[in-house]
Image (cartoon, rainbow, N blue to C red; front, top):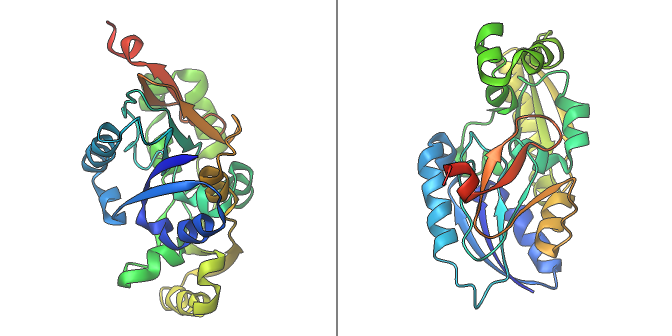
Length: 251
């Protein structure tokens, strides 16, 4: 199969390793990870790449992103289906599954974390999971109710709001391409200087490998049909859904 992959360069080493083992022919376009700071701009970049993809050459467009600050919300497909992992942000993708994310971060969604991809190029070593921003954990109950409804607002506050000192921790997610660089010790030293607890977790590249190998089960990937747009669901299961463009615009 011939795919076009549009992907954040925070995954570049993991993606290259997966592509070396894949039987599929994948053309890659990377966007710079700093683009995440400007979701509207990132959305424009991705949409432009989607629109400029030749349907006579590629059967599917693969997206190496999660919701990423709502950067993928509003993306529209043309004649080519788009495939994207069901993930709030890259943390889930680095861990390899939604279940792994919930196991490690479900009780501390505001915990800071990092990975080798964020350490390269001398970047700041810590990230915040974006899940709590998407769900509005810092909002009041009324603000949440206005946005999601009272039942969902109650669930967010009771289940997802941080109840510990997770903001005083930092977690390093170590994926195979970075094991030889011994970044773990460097990050641990930085955390100690700031008085933070340090924890290391083994990452898993299975979602990345499944994406490029065309193994898109419905539970872990959203396949967006032609002439649909991506909408956020903002839960821990679906996370996002595909809606016909005419339905979203009301035409």
